[in-house]
Image 1 (cartoon, rainbow, N blue to C red):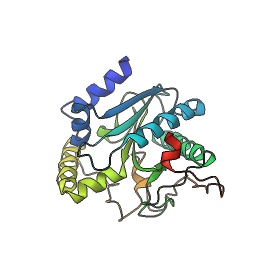
Image 2 (image 1 turned 180 degrees about the vertical axis):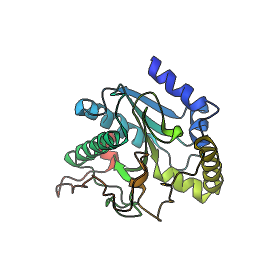
Image 3 (image 1 turned 60 degrees about the vertical axis):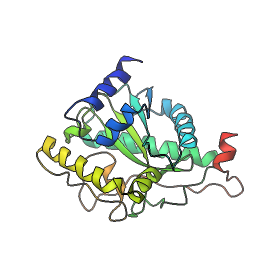
Image 4 (image 1 turned 135 degrees about the horizontal axis):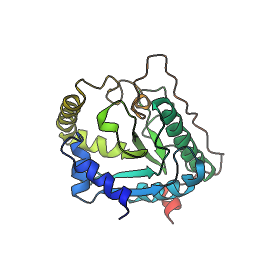
Length: 231
């Protein structure tokens, strides 16, 4: 394991880190980590897209184990919150565009409109909630030494809701995060109440914020299933 991947594992293991779901995933060897180039460059987009597609195809929605995919970038380390937000959405737009040109349609279980309260990012036919981390994040829980994007399966969250684990885990995480930061994260909303796109970068945004993401339609006749993608 490279130094940066080991550093990320130590970050998750630290007593201060509030997300018990990530801690559980790490303990169960359920984190897929990928070290790549700069977050403000498209150079690694194809590599991330390929790895994320493989991760999507390997997910078992019936498994009780929560898994996450993490892309850890080697910089830049000096991005402020707005610059990081721009880089994050540029990467997500590029990953979506790669889906489109390969014929992969948006997941049918979530909305592709980033203004919709039912929006989740879709890559490889799998809907994801994305968490951005970087050195200059205002929330301590988002403050990692390198820029990183954490992809959490929306369907796994729905599984947690169905079996009653989600609400308990959510309350534990929010309580721990508030204790770490000194206040409650003002951007937190449950799926279906407000667009989760507002939460991805970790920056506090106002009601007039417009998500810089434009979903594209797959060319008719080019659609493929996840099975076709894996074959």
